[in-house]
Length: 310
Image (cartoon, rainbow, N blue to C red):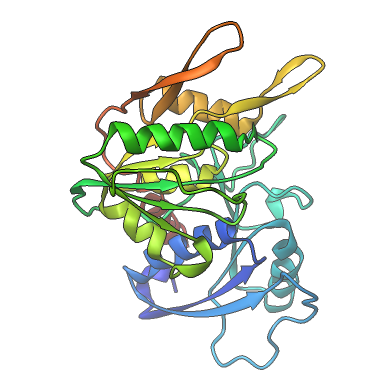
């Protein structure tokens, strides 16, 4: 019996404790739930997980996992139960992609010699999409932190934040940190900003704010936040951050190349910091706005394909 014929499907979600990975799983499960009744069993692979559920009521139809820690346990269950379909999110690093039934892989991840036939490509990271109309005069700002993709400068981000609040006094901004953020001093502003700590907001708070804000400004180190914003009707803008340097010059990664491509196509806007003088003193900023575009709906498109294939 195909998935389309079932009145209810059971999904086992294998999670590794990483928020970005888990949001991709949740986006996929949400799309399944818009088509049929879904029962979800969550399996935590982030600690010393050794055994998958032995006494289960409902036989799983689908096993979904994201992150290398989940792959062994997904395949262990698949080998024992035989019939569940396995869906891995992102390109596996240590297991052959062909071991899974489907691999949902962002287009920035490349296979060097051969792309397996079970790969479904996505534009960027899989996210839940929103069709809500933005509230005029609102903006959400998300501050990231250190990453292997960009050299995070607290001074550079603080300056851009201060200038955004000054230059756009008619926009009511909500500014939030993320798990990798350093401690930030709240800049002086004209009463047009609220500040939030990621630890003190509800799980879906940021997604809901992005979906209703006219502007979303994020640091480019968090590719998941960039694509989450692109999956709404909000105008997505990124802060300026410098690339890492080594003895050969600037270090470009698949993420920084992808961000450059989004800037070039004007799918995202970006902040330019204007410097003057011999020492490159920061004098001003310029904001380059993105072109108008419809929200990405990659999770919907992928589930459409999966429902036809299973």
